[in-house]
Image 1 (cartoon, rainbow over the protein chains, first blue to last red):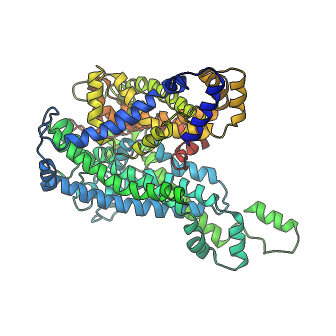
Image 2 (image 1 turned 30 degrees about the vertical axis):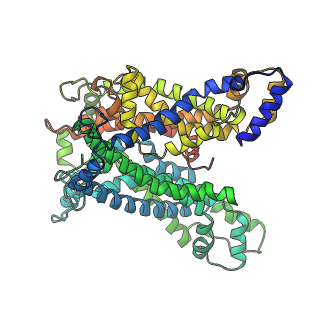
Length: 310
Length: 302
């Protein structure tokens, strides 16, 4: 790509008087300085910096005193970190399965040439415009045991009814899931709907001519055809889940019982900015990076690696 | 469904029997969709209803029931009297902080990203595509890994804890998605236009301001929607990069509602929550399909 533009540039330049290489296209280079700085200094530089300092014993301030893998050993022996990882895995898997399954089913329903499609979509997508803080606080109120759903059902006469997910360490993640799904499913539905609309009408006609039932067409023809949409959705949703932070802060602050709903992002924040133990924070954030790379590298390989060879 | 049955009636007896509007299939379909919509609308309903009740009614009544006696007191209190720590000047401070954070952040991030997209399409230079790839990959990296290096960079620049520091942070993290958005849009503008302008002697900025900018107003609106809602809803960067005096609305809201001191005033809390959600909600309902286009931009392959 850049080679051909180089050739163009050389051709136009040789027609005019010769100029030094670096001044060619100079306005564009100057205009791109913020992008270059962000890419190289913040994204690449910042990442390397944090990874390097995760091997030091930095406390209040970063310092280069090597301690090898000590920070990581400590990290993986902390109960709080292990709980965070476990919570994120559980929340992540549940959230992925449910958002994608529900998002797809809703998109299929929306794709039945229904009336008022815009109204339905507007209603399903509005939570996505709200912040996790707002989402968390509303659901915290609805799930309030005294006044929320539990209280209302008890007032109706079912006095033994119990629905208090946020105050029970066993169920707190389900409480977070209810709010998280409410916020994000509409978005996935929109992506899936766009995918469904992208499928050629002729395929539906062919399936109808062959007498294949609708549900089977979805299962055998449409879903395999939508593979790229599913993969893209998966990557977007998964990279959002790993960042999960605001929702937990708003709904439970990591509780109940101290750390029942802790997540890695919270661990990082607390060690970097509260406990003044930077090394631990760096090690934890490096682990977060690693988990993203596990998702990202196979995806990048499928997405971009395939193109070059095929 | 009615128009479909109409048209099949017009073509005469051929084809399938006209579908009735109230077929079991339709009842099922619309039934499910309406139930789903009720689930989505429930929190908004509860938020509005609770914020219009007095505390005695909140304690006595049902959170789903509309208020018997409507009062706007909780709204007034949330806006101008609610306490965070020692400050009792309400959410209004957070609101104005969010405004003065959001406006420059939106302008700066869109300005940078649109020029990036333009340079990436029309003024490719050696390595430009590599920087773009890094940017896109960077958008998937957890923010946590870059939090502290940015603290150091801002401290060196003397901007740590200031509003401008936060504005720069928002511009940095908004850059990948916005650059992608603009790059994809500019690539659809015919190259002949660009070449003709070059022949006429227009330079980098001339073409940007006289051709690209006027031709791409829709995508600027999409970017505007994306950034206003995104920056308004931010919590993490607000906590990390500003002082308590500059905390944006989301941070202040969380501090008000989740404070452990004092009697919980649920009606005031809900009024505050609704106030914080109001700006993105208005943007969302006014913008309609453009919002969908904005969020889908991230999913479209570049």
